[in-house]
Length: 404
Image (cartoon, rainbow, N blue to C red; front, side):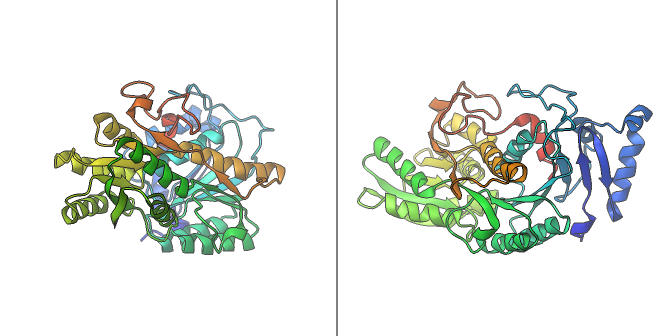
């Protein structure tokens, strides 16, 4: 098994400035350098896209350090009109590294990371990304590894409240500020956070029930596919539905665990529909689980089920366009990355914490009627969407984000 300390690390700062490739990774560094031409080596300037092209087909694993301090301006970014932009010597972030401790490598997480990369445009920051494969023990180990590397700040997308809290308290002891991207309620680790980002799931559950009451006033049974138990997100969502369905013709018949993964989501959906043949509504707590459930509904011709999702990704948008997801409590993963990075950058650069400990991320209900066109451009719902950002992924940065 590969030790965390043996993970491949590539640092970008306008070009490659360092390749740290101990142990089994050493051959990869040699292979990359051997494929560079002499001019590139002399300039020590290799674009991210050129590097990724050289590394195509290589399995880099979950521990890649992709330190992105602004590109070399070689390519114009597509879709959003934003360029990578070379950082000047006096740009913020010189000599500083931001650590990311992520729950897993789902499409939602990758789109989140594209928001962070975009937020680092024109800076000299580097970042180290670690993903936990939905394993609390691995999450704690990842945070400990980031502390050992003496990063200047850590952004956490928690696996569980317990494991993330243990990790950030160790970061606090080391003097490293942290930001929580998906905070639900007070935790034991709150004193380690300079600020937290919250998608209010009490409000989210009410948004969904309001939508159902407006469109299906006769009511009915609701089946729910939740994410990872212990993360806090699903627990708050469940409480929100308990409150929002009170004194309504809607009721939650069963909650199944999808664990943010395709196979468990399909199993949970199938099992609950068999147990509750009269259920009319299915609510999935993430876009990834929504896509999995939509594929099952499509394959089994269950067009009698009204399917409501939460958040968004490319595949879920496709299923919504095709009618297998009717609506979603939408918030943007890339905006989540941008907002959490802004909190950390403001502290690192200005020593300022947010005025309020909790920053609420905008969310709203959407249907395919909200798409700017049919189908919408990749990563975009509608550039003018409000209050939530209409950009849910900066696709021009996906090739970098996928290396985590």
